[in-house]
Figure 1 (cartoon, helix red, strand yellow):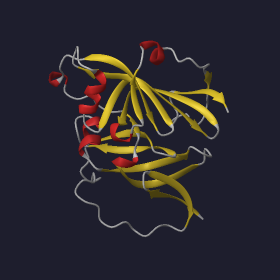
Figure 2: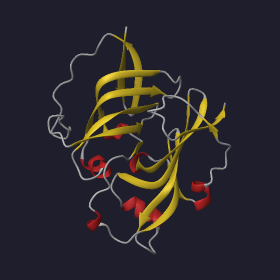
Figure 3: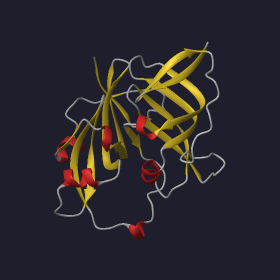
Figure 4: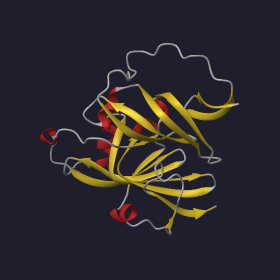
Length: 222
């Protein structure tokens, strides 16, 4: 039997069986592999699984690509079930942006000459099984939550953490930037610096899939 991935609504499910029929041609929003620019590592979070693979970046920044491209083509993909911890590997996978609750941002940071003066505000975001904390960058004096609502769908948080359960273990990952799907957020609230910089749970080193889980911290066993 062959491990496969089935997309139902917002959920990517691991299933086993015969290979699915070839997908029909995708629309112009698909990132074509032949239009190669820069290959980056891609780590994302869906409703019931984590995805890790490679993506051809054809924008200045991953955040821009996530906001402008409706579907992404990943290659050399590993998919980890949050419920069981089971991992399935696939050579290529096309994912709708709307399936992704959060993405760890890798790759270039864009043209520094286009950046404007911004101030970081700490916020917390709940997205299904994930709790994300980090700093949203807005103009000084503005309401950070109002600024988030006015941003495009995929919103970057810097110095971020994401917390979730996988295979019965509570985990926390840290990343310089996590981009979350604002339209799929259950709630967004102001936070404090301490909640981001000093996690209030004991930290125990974890050791699953060193390449995939770089930055992962095991918090507790449930």
